[in-house]
Image (cartoon, rainbow, N blue to C red; front, side, top):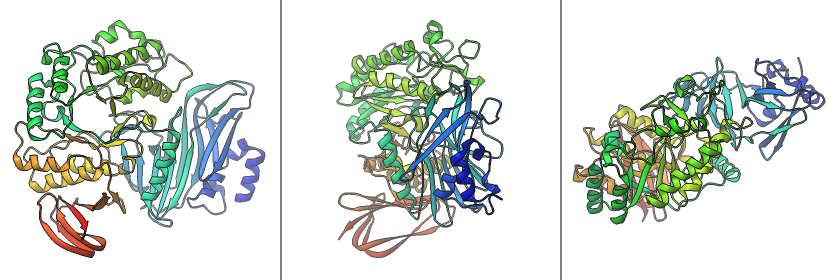
Length: 603
């Protein structure tokens, strides 16, 4: 057996030798704490999966954060595929609840460390084909563990400038890993790796608040005064949207609910994926005319663009194949060879954000849309493909994180002062590059999707108003769902504190549903806080009152409770019911799949 003290001494003398000793060689397996993490083994792997011996990893801790530098101390250049910053055993119970972010927006991880589960609908390993080692649940950027003493642990990367950071969770171990992508590290050269943090405590929300503060310090966010409210064409008309449908809804909005300021034309106006400055037959060859009419009515023109992708038949791809990410033989990389090929008109090809021609193209597209078309809001979709794996970039020294971030910088040069929303984007690599972040999968008018997206959104509440404005996707209030499920849906959207976008054909919406939509805008900008990940009772502290968001996710009636420290007048928003004055413990019984929103005003 080797003691902790002896391992620390060995690490000081010979980091390479110490890296080969696993923590399960200690006399007693440690728990999960900072001392254990600081003392844990590390290793650097090459293309064959074997450790590289001529590497030195310097890990410097300060205030619960670690900055690491990797140096090639040998005489030969080496390809680095993976840097295991920390490799440790733990004693966490198998029932410890897990939450982990995905690389891209549609993936979230839940369940327990003994039985991880998917919260997102399209996962990194199965749908996007990101490599995942056997026996591990790979999460990206952030992992939290709930249960035991202390009640919560948080492990996270607090920067994402160049390298992708992951956390490999197994029933008895955790590895904190940086993807080297097979890049070459020359003799004597060093890489500054991404910053990492570990914290623990009784209050999960406080841990996430601290993480947000550090992420903002490393990636100052783009500021936009308030979360937008508007209307989106996709969830009522899809890719076959017409100019007439948009203009009819513009008229309805102007008359019935003018607070929906941004009128967004979604996918369907373009003749081909990639040819964004051309217009398909649906808009009579000139989407600009519709955008101008939106502006002339006093509203803000908004448009959907997937900046990093193009289909094979697009003019962009046919004229400039050299602007795209390459295979190893130098031909453009077809996305379905390494990842998801695309949801419409695929397989797609991915623009190379390190290529000067691609950068100039991105800037030109968005400059045109901003200055000539008058767009003041851009929904950027399919951004994941800007950070595609398995290809070669024009700049051979660039990582896929750098390729994506350089491409996004070119986009931002064109968008100017417009609002930029990231959708289907790589979450951590988008830090500091977007005003808004979609926080769930697409909504559908069915209970399972409503409840799934609600959980996805609320687990990301800590990001809203700190990193960006969250976009919980559209609020849909038409269709055949029962009233209780509409109330659940509307309550969950309100609890996000983020953007409000109607996804309905507002020329046909009923007056009761329109009244519910009116009550949601303008967005508060303040996300509800929850005591735990059950997400049943959330509180929103407004300027003059407390909003309590109650959600019954179950199939049976539930009694939900909260505490008011002094006398409050309580009113339920959706029904308008006056519940009188309440003080102390308040219990409300909700039916299955139901939601209530209580406004509590100090009496």
